[in-house]
Image (tube, rainbow, N blue to C red):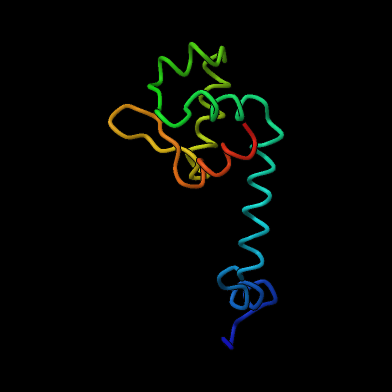
Length: 102
């Protein structure tokens, strides 16, 4: 251990990468955040298997700019959607979630 190491440093040195159990728990928490939010479920449903561009998504979702960006950022960050050539598409994780909650 380092010579000038306090309890906080020791904690973070010991922390390391998450275990498989912690990763599964984080995935379940993320899935819950999507499934209990009607706007996120609606966005996943609208994107569907064919994908949509931003204009179509905004029109069909009926969300204002703030809530649209907020929810889309979440879905992109969590890896449920991807942006390809101006089209939003479901990722593999997004497809499996779409099949279970939409």
